[in-house]
Length: 352
Image 1: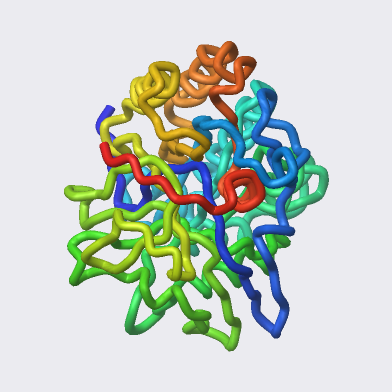
Image 2: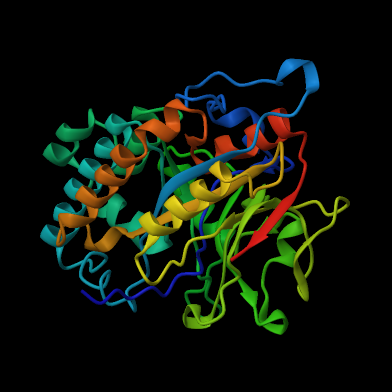
């Protein structure tokens, strides 16, 4: 099945960064918002420094990520169509099943949402629809039902002109649905460098549609138009500049998570195995945090059951790696805390 990805993603796993602020003068810090994954063999929720300040062993940190998109994305067109309630509800059910399957299997999942999907939630998450989520809307439920295993983040293509919005508008929409901002930049343009849109996120961003202010905590999902030249790297670092994106600058305020796997070829299982094999073969730098994101199109979850089956089988295939301490499943916000607390924000960049 052909996939259509119009989002600016990348992949995931370890990270760090400064605090994130919400609208109305409130603040939110990703180092305190989300439960901390311990970086141990079971991906638990106990955080903190390692051995009184010593760096943790080299490990691979992984998470599943989905994006939903605006109506110009072919798979999402019907899901976000305000006249097609049944399509949205089918996707809602499948998304819940996907999240539960990953959480139950011991994995981790970040749902990154565009503005239009939040509007569908406001439109249709009412009455009996809420019975399956304990009276909560879809995103509030997903953000709360499995702490440390599932989280909801902002994702935005941003639009100028009439009806325009930016990342802060999407963060505000999530906030109103009961999902506090965690500062995750769920996709941005990195290439070509003269088209980048991430350096402005080093400063607080005011919404287009309101006075809401949102502050980015960490970059995730650096891409390119139609994903023809996405930066592919594992690790955690602070990009120096648009022309030196893969170079760490310790003085830069906004860190980036490397996704590593190719987001358009649907081969994440192969790439995860490859990265773990490098670790086992002592080919990775000592005491560093390596990262990978396993990308799945959210708007196809109700049409293709194999997407959920593949996620479960991938987790099961690496049970021994988790037990051995080589692999940790973590959400993006938790990875930020791990990078700071257990790796002392030490950068590493592994291009692919």
